[in-house]
View 1 (cartoon, rainbow, N blue to C red):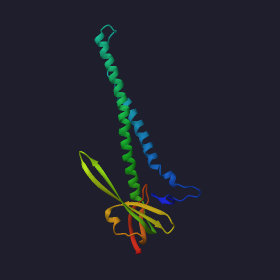
View 2 (view 1 turned 90 degrees about the vertical axis):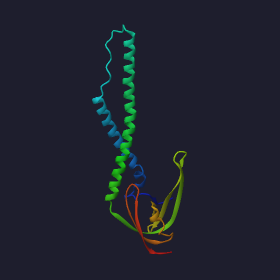
View 3 (view 1 turned 90 degrees about the horizontal axis):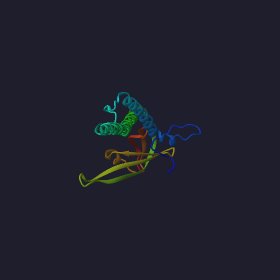
Amino acid sequence: MKNVIYHKPKKKEGMDVSKNSKYSSWRSIGVTLSILYIITVLVYWGIYEPLEYIDDNGTIPEITRVNEIIKSINQDSKSFFLIAGFFVCLFISIIIVRIYEEIQLYNQPIEKVSATLKSKEIYTRIGGGFRVGRYMQDSYKLEFKSDDQIKFIFFVSFEQYFPILEGNKGILTYKEGRRNKYIGFEIKQIK
């Protein structure tokens, strides 16, 4: 599939930026995760106080056994924190990056391009299980081709999908972002 654009890259001489932009979200999540996790670990080590051992010269076996249990609890709590902290930071990082990308998309100007609707497809997904029951979910895909022979693919709502027929020509309006956002299609010529 040549010239398929899920997010329109900025044109730079001698460089295809579309390959780099595919990984920009993951890079942002990784950087955010690293920063949050380092801060979390530093705060944890700053406030963490392990359970204290009971004073003993090793003469009473019960106190020695209790000290071994305390040592095990201290080690387990460190391990649990490091693992649980990582997953909590990962979840928060994904949310932060997604919100940032939506804010960027909201602030982008609306782009207009002369295009033709080349194809439209409906994908039906069947899901569910024993507890929640079965359900069907439809996804609607529109594929436009601009006069410059560049393809634009959008996943749209039911209301945006049905008014347009394949072969219609007109003005496609969208916003550029991590994934382009479909705004509308003004039909100029019906095929």
